[in-house]
Image 1 (cartoon, rainbow, N blue to C red):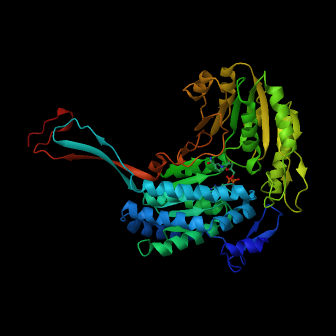
Image 2 (spheres, rainbow, N blue to C red):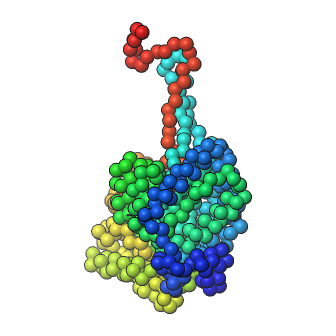
Image 3 (cartoon, protein in one colour):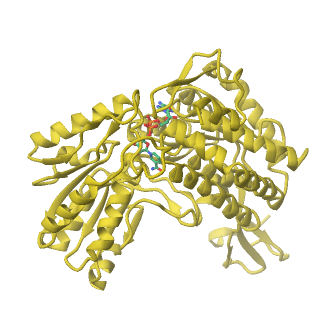
Amino acid sequence: MTHADVLKAAGLSADELSGGTLAVHSPIDGAEVARLTETSAADMDAIVARSRTAFQSWRDLPAPRRGELVRLLGEELRAAKDELGAVVTLEAGKITSEGLGEVQEMIDICDFAVGLSRQLYGLTIASERPGHRMMETWHPMGPCGVITAFNFPVAVWSWNTAIALVCGNPVIWKPSEKSPLTAMTCMKILDRALERFGDDAPDGLVQLVIGGADVGAAMVGHKDVAIVSATGSTAMGRKVGPKVAERFGRCILELGGNNAMIVAPSADLDMAVRAIVFSAVGTCGQRCTSLRRVIAHDSIRAELVERLAKAYATLPIGDPRAPGTLVGPIIDSAARDRMLAALQIARGEGGTVHGGEAVEAVTGGAYVSPAIVEMPAQTDIVRTETFAPILYVMGYTELSDAIAMQNDVPQGLSSCIFTTDLREAETFLSDAGSDCGIANVNIGPSGAEIGGAFGGEKETGGGRESGSDAWKGYMRRATNTINYSRELPLAQGVKFDL
Ligand code: NAD
C-alpha cells in the first residue's frame, strides 16, 4: 500500500491532510505525507473553556456510564486495529507487529478502565470520636492536558484518556508534531464510539490540538487545565514541570530513561541474549524503556558480548512494512546524526564500538545498524539517554557494585536482573536494590503490561500512568467526616461554653 492508501484507509481525507503549515514526513522514506493546519496558541483560551463546559456535565454522569464510552472505544479500536497500526508504522516507523502491538495496548487499557469505572473507591477510616464516621472520596478534577511523544504516538494517549474519562475529566491532547496523523486517526475512532454512546457525552469531551512546543506550552500554562500529563524528554519535563507547579496544577511527568540489565554469573544466557536483543534494538532503540546498558559479571561478559555480536549481525534492518524486518528506521536524520555523534564520544571515552553505522535501506529514510559498545567504565555518555539503538556493556565483580552502577545515572525508569540466584534477585528488588519505577527479574526492561503502574523516578519525572492505582493521579481526594451522634465533640478537647 502507498502512504496515501494507508491514510485513506484510516479515514483521513485529502482535504484534512493539506493546506497547512506543519509538514509531516514518514520515517520510512522521508516522504512528505501531509501539511496540516496547526492550532494557534491564541485559541487555547477557547479550547480550554470548551473543555471546562464539557467537565460540568461529564462529571455528573455516573462513573460506570462514563466507562461505557471507554468500552465502546475499545470495541472501535478492535475493529480499526489494522488501519491504525498501519498509520503508526507509516508515521513512527515501527515494524508491523509493533504498530499492532501498540494498538493492542490501547485495547487493554480500555478494558482495564471499564473495570475501574465500577471501582474508584476510597477508604473508610476509624474515627476517634464516638458517633462519627470518616471516609475518603475521589472526585474528578477538570480538563486533563495530555502531551505525547512520537515514539508511542497512540498508546500513551489511550493510557491517559481511558483513565481520565472514567475518572470524570475531559481531555485536551497535544500529540508530537512528528506524529499528528496517528492522533487524527484516533480521534476518528473515538468519534465512532461517541456516536454510539449518544447524547450523554458533551461537545469537546476530547479535543485535539496540533502543533509543536508553543501550543503545548500554551496548554501547560493555562490555569484551568487541572492536570497536565506530559510524556517526552527530560528537557521538555524541565520546562513543563515548573510551569505547572507555579500555578499549583497537577502534573504527571513521564520522561527519559536509561535502562539497565545486570547479568549475573548464574543467569540463563539464552534467555538473557533474547531479552537484550529484543529490548535494545526493538523500535530501533526508541522506547523510553529500551535497554541501554548491560552490566555483566566479568566471568560471563566476553561470552555474552560474543553472542550478542553474533545475534546483532543477523538482524534484518529495513522497511518496517516488510515481513521479517526487525529493525525499522530511526525517526529522522537528526536522530541518526545524534546517534553517530554519541558513538564518537563513546570512542573518545574509551569505548569499543561494534556496528552503529548508517545503513542504506530505503531511499530517503534514516536507517542505522544497532551498536554494541564495550565501555571500560560508566562514563558521561553512558549516563546520557541517546534515543537510538546503542547498547553500552560494562563489567562488574560484586553485585553491590553492579547495583550501584545501575543506579548511578540521572534517570530512573526501568531495570532488570538476570540471575537464578534467589538472594541476588531479592537483593535487586529490595530497598537497597534498583531505584527505578520498574524492576524486573529474568525479563527485559521494556514491554510493560498495562495492569501495573508505569513510570519512573529521578529525571524520569516521578509520574505513574496506566494500571494499579495510577488513576488516583487523575482525581482529587476528599476526606469526609460525618457526625451521626447528638454531640459535637471539639478537637483537642477544647471546650466552648456557648
Ligand atoms: P520531546 O520532549 O521532544 O517531545 C515530547 C512532546 O513534548 C511533544 O509533543 C512536544 O511537542 C512537547 N513539548 C516539547 N517542549 C514542550 C514545552 N516546552 N511545553 C509543552 N510541550 C512541549 O520528546 P520526543 O522526542 O517526542 O520523545 C522521546 C523522549 O520521550 C525520550 O526521552 C523518551 O525516553 C521519552 N518518553 C518517555 C516515556 C515515558 O513513559 N517515560 C514514554 C515515551 C517517550
